[in-house]
Image (cartoon, rainbow, N blue to C red):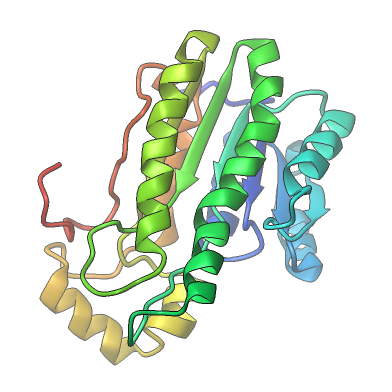
Length: 250
């Protein structure tokens, strides 16, 4: 299937490692031109050098939580490409707590997992509206509360905001969807949350009906499809990629 992505311009945040890096690579393989946003320039440069020349990678070394991150990214993309067709809001972080968590932890989690991505989307939306086309894909996280995790509430906030945004922008040819990953191999999972193979194996056998931890490509292929013109009638959705882990049917 031709996903009709050749020449489209995509901004991927958190592109330096893990899910963001894989998403950027898959979009490039489909012919997208890429803006890569993250803080770690050496990792962005190594990614850019590995992409096909057709990706024309634009490196944006930026803390995505900065108040002006969206405006800076928008201006850089407009100057290089003159348009932005796709936004993948990928940056974020889990915040599990052993107690109730301090106000500082809760505020930080809301900033990282909700406000930062919202600000970037709001900065990019006018470019999409001007061309009557756009795809916004938010990589979120679980909002099913197994324990106190300060990221759960902002994940839920993203899902509600994205649904409202999808209804607001649908007539402009812009779709907005959210993807909460289950346990998928990434920098966060493999180094911080489940740093050993034994932990990963035990958790997968107990919690994942598929029986294994997913690979970044398992999520990246869905992002690539949702980013395409082919996915024009899919909007306002929360699509879980978790090997069947989530217990709720909706």
